[in-house]
Image 1 (cartoon, helix red, strand yellow):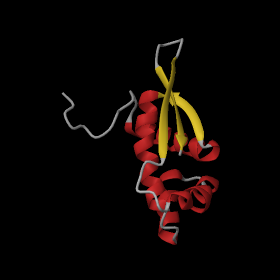
Image 2: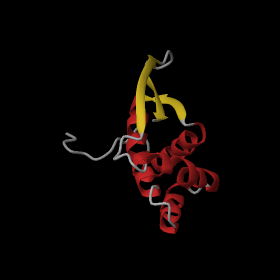
Image 3: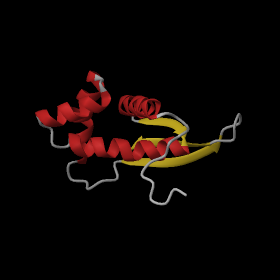
Length: 116
């Protein structure tokens, strides 16, 4: 039983899951809207909202912490300088998940995740 288990494993090893979330986050920061499976979107929502909350401080330590998670200079710069200042007066809920369709190949539920 998984009572109170903290995250979704997504059928991957821990290193693969970490890389997946990092790449999805970079893609979301670049385009501000991506389509992925519903379970990945739900896990990504928690991951990126913590980063945006940290980036709202807009100081040197925020850059370092966000860079330690993403390892992508352009995305970190865009997140800290452009995206995070939009949400300074907001107390969370920076992303929105919209269910779209069922994928034909494996019947996975698909969803858009976008920045509000």
